Amino acid sequence: MDRLKRSLHVPARTASPYRFTEPRWRSALVAHSGPAPAVTAAMSDFGYRTDELHGRANLPDDLAMTGPVQLLTPEGAGFLREIVHALKPCAVHNDYVVSHRLRGVEALSPFVHDMVRDSSFLRRASHLVGVPLVPHPIRDAGVQINYYEPSRTTVQAAPVAKWHRDGMNYVFTMTLSDHGEHEGGDYIYYRGHPDAFDRSREEITAAGPDHPHVRTAPFQHVGDTMFTRGSRVYHAVTPVTRGHRTTLAVSLFCPLLGDQDENRFWHSAPDDGLLRTVSNWRALRQAVRRPATYCRRESIPILPMPRTR
Image (tube, rainbow, N blue to C red):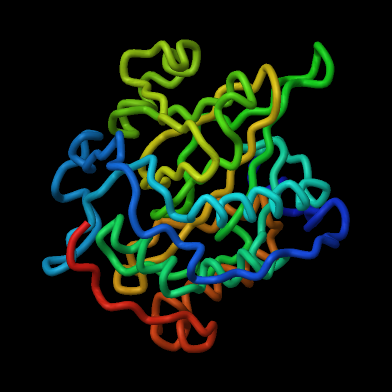
């Protein structure tokens, strides 16, 4: 009922207009190598059985998490940091999951629009995960920015991402703040099956990072990126007590496994409103049924199957 009530309102798309002269996107801003990820975990490490995995016989899809990795060069991450800072006045407040965020970034930023459609960027992301990835048909949720900062009053709850799972299967979370620029704001995740989390939700929420099955993603520098199977891994962000933390979340779509996309209508309706969600849902269904048509219509490069991670 709460989701239905939220979906009946017409949410503000942005808080103010966006008037920033962006740098031009270039394929040379994609990073093709970097240090080995500190974290790499399969779905089995989170307690998933073989029959619960996505994929098919010739396309296993069992990576749960890896990172931090660099998707962009330092120059590219620096450009993106400037853009995200300039977009902050457009962000709206919403207490559904993350209190201060901006959805539909691809529609506002030409740099981001071109980045997520660049063949080098998509090839890099696909290689990390092991399946071909393209921009998600639900553009409102495809790229979003989360802004965190300390509470402005002693009675206001600290802006935080509550424990949740995403609607998206393939989520790349890029930090655009150095760790030294803030205290708190740690990306934490539950290293276990969602059923186990649901049975102990109150205990885990109370313990936070101190719970024995909760881990902290080792974000350190601008551009550090974690891939997470967002729809299947519970995660949250601890309150920021000093400074500012900003992240960009890019959610991609596997056209060969589109029928296994885990988006649910009532997951996005409270954010985007009922009518807009109907439109978004129609676009997703069309992409699932005719992925090649979707890619051609959106000028998305169709990538070959990645050979290995």
